[in-house]
Image (cartoon, rainbow, N blue to C red):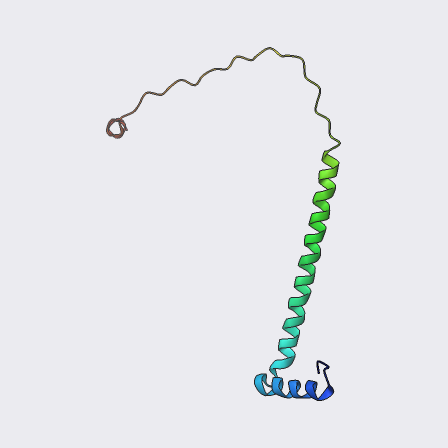
Length: 95
């Protein structure tokens, strides 16, 4: 009852030709093939990315923290001088 017989395929082909026309079927098959190729490449890249992340995570577990550095003299830091507010009207008059 669930078996696919040759006449089922023939009826399907005739219906597809009637619906889409003989000229559009090769283009549709070509675009379907391209889409499947893109999907395959993307899923492969996702698997590769997952593998790369796992390798990086394994590599990072072997890192040791740096030993503490001897204390250095603090450098003097100069605070910036606050600027006096300038009146825009006065600035235009001065120029």
